[in-house]
Length: 276
Image (cartoon, rainbow, N blue to C red; front, side, top):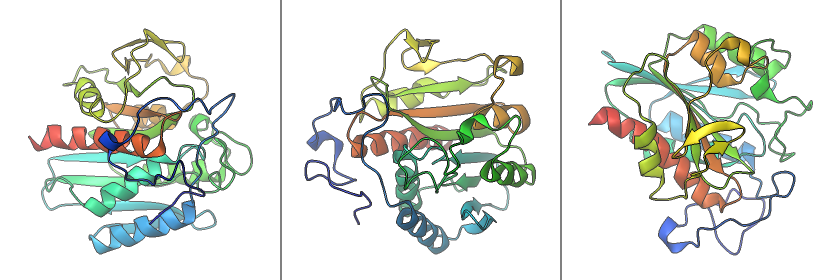
């Protein structure tokens, strides 16, 4: 099934990484200028895969069709939360979520909570913001948008998570990188994620990314709430729901299939680290 609005050099999502030329496309000038996706079709396919594989589904904002999928086991040893699609110009996250749901390779001793697309009305516009022009990922301290209010209300009904993953893209990036929030010095998964993703996508090895110190594609930002007057989703999760959070940033100026492969690899790296 092809979810792109168009085709890129005749390729489709899911092309094996090693068969592709992995280099920057140099399309993104001043903003994301890559492929869009039919998000409604993608969401329908995600829901179909989730239901077929035994996930509980919930619509927590009917007017915007915001969905959550939950999978709980009898004696969980951990809980994992994954979200995607908070920016409408970042199609790799929802497509990665669809692939993961279809493959159905989840840990059997773990509870999962998935929010597969937090900004579905932004995708038809192929823009970072919501339909009202609001960056939903800057809304989690003083929420105004219906999407953010509904998402926070849903999160408040959920238990705490052992680890949270937020799937993103960066249209300016030279390669893949991540943010790690880990104030208690728990065993870090950051290098494991980077190593796995490097098999399918270039890593941004810059010493500074987005104005923050970086090393080997890893950023450890400030955890002081006062340092972020506009909270992203990850900061809300860190403050209220978890002590271990990873924001995954695939490079939007590469082929979409490469970005999807990177995000799937990142999630698998986390699951495999627990599974081993």
